[in-house]
Amino acid sequence: MGVIFDTLRFIAASALDVLPIAVFLFAFQRLVIGEPLANSKQIVVGFVFVVTGLGLFLIGLETTLFPLGKLMAQQLTNPAFLFEAVGKSVDKLLWHDYYWVYIFACAIGFSTTLAEPALMAVAMKANAVSGGAIGVWSLRVAVAIGAGIGVGLGCYRIVTGLPIHYFIAAGYVVVILQTAIAPKLIVPLAYDSGGVTTSTVTVPLIAALGLGLAESVPGRSALLDGFGLVAFTALFPIITVLAYGQLAVLKERISSSRTKARKSEEVETNAL
Image 1 (cartoon, rainbow, N blue to C red):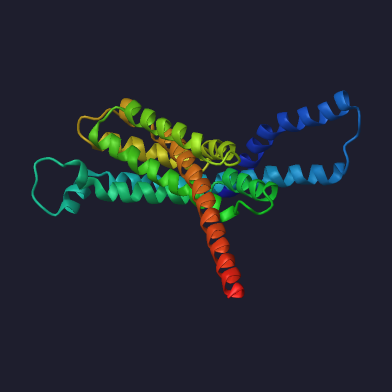
Image 2: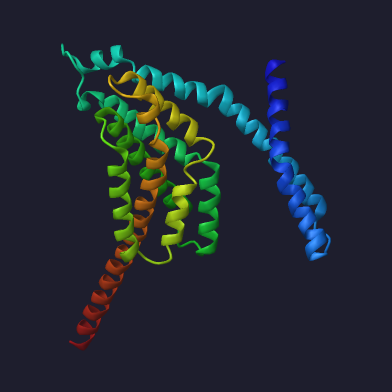
């Protein structure tokens, strides 16, 4: 019964969250545009599905994914586990002794980003608008790789205690350089791809990992060092999506040059 009541509570909370959007859209359509909604029954049914789906999604995260991610973060950042993983007697752990943390960070960043509903929506729209030139899975994997790299590098920063602004500034320098040479059509999509990673699934797990790691590493502050992983998660997908666009252009150029070379060979053969 407790699960049922919790589910109904999340659905009700989702309805309250969606209600202002629905009221604004209906009021704007009626008062400003002055036209009735087309297919109003289908729209109402769609809103019901959205509210129910959000409620079920949130209760699923609350009861399964969040506790599991928090538990794994606590276990991996436990000093006893880290000393045992090193396999030798040491007085103090070094940055490379946290390799399991880096592996887990990359894996959790990749998998949670791949499961982001916002990223799925952006990828499907990009695929439709580009006429299939941008693959749904290609874009999702490119964004997820960037998020995984970002979370892993963010954990390295927490372990070493290096200032966060060094990493963020260097990352945006790379973004600026890539923006200047990347295909113009991919640039806005790449910048949006960084934002969709900071959504419902990714943020709670990444924040829990950062706080747990900062609390277990000696000399680190949970407040000063535990936060900041989300910034890495939003930055590095921009780099990987821009790289995805650059690789696509490079692949097209190589294919075009091979086609031209093949045609020239055929012309020479026919001439002989």
